[in-house]
Image (tube, rainbow, N blue to C red; front, side):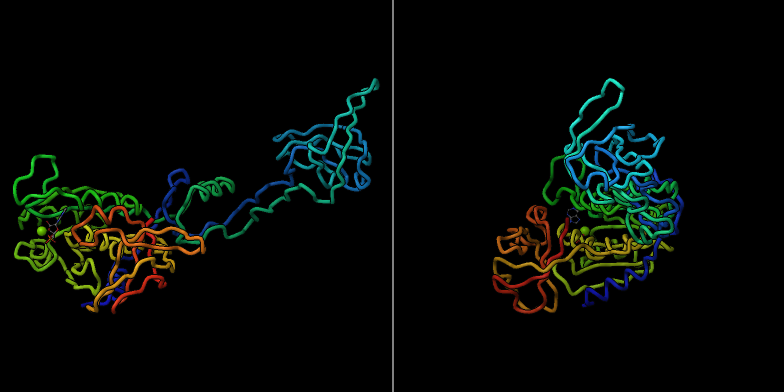
Length: 404
Ligand code: AMP
Ligand code: MG
């Protein structure tokens, strides 16, 4: 058996990042930066007020309450047209530029309008003393010119899209989404809703894997169910290799006589067949058809899922440029014993977790753990990593991989 880390390293090494492309910021959401983003603008572009209120000389309000002359008004989007002199103030709205002369803002909640007198002079009573700089957002206090905002390898999230807009980054250099063909194989698989005859089961893996690919950010090419027929499988795989960045297939990679994926890929591709020291998902195949990586996942649905998570997903993320390849892992507490027998494998138990009153993340296995029992696994939100040995007692620390 191959240790999991060795199998992962082997696969990752064979899946280099896809050639970067330049795209409009508007099309960049979810893609991964291939070059760092350095700002060519400052944010905010000018010093402005953080509150609605009155722009003042702070020395004028040190003995608050005080009365000041209101000599103007600046709305967001307007520019100041005069200086604020001693004894004067300007009414100002959040986001408006600070007028020259003023060095602080008294918020509107600390003001009382005294009205306009017969001479047309308006006054306001300000009841709060404020320090110089109070309620002012300095020019460039979010982003400076030349600042490294985001390094290569970062995925463009919605807030990052907002930052790109705020610094007027019109185009970004990113890795493209991997275009990935997915298929399942097996004469027993029915995917058209027709009644099952004895020996037939409904297809589930391709449906699941297509969504896992989409969730990972891939463009999915659904090749459907392919019969256990060598010629048909060869035709489908060759077509996909010519058209896609990677191929994910499920089924037919273990030791059975009808494991035609093994027969066909063994003939047309450069494959490595592995028995990985883990449970579930021990059988796994990886190779290249031409230059296209192929992930041969096992057919048992839970194995297919776990194999995708641990073998295919990190490699596809590498192809799409992610600096971070794996799911988040945390140290949790197991509420139940996780007993097992030594078999040379690391076991991945599907679990659910919650934060306990002790502030720690507590996990419990979902009911059924068989590799054909996808229904139970489907409700899990994490996998507990139980190393080879006799397992863990209730209350033990356990490493957990968060699936969502
Ligand atoms: P295989 O890896 O082809 O030997 O399949 C192992 C087990 O997984 C068998 O019980 C198959 O019927 C089942 N299986 C294979 N592919 C799928 C699929 N796409 N959906 C549901 N079950 C599958
Ligand atoms: Mg099969």
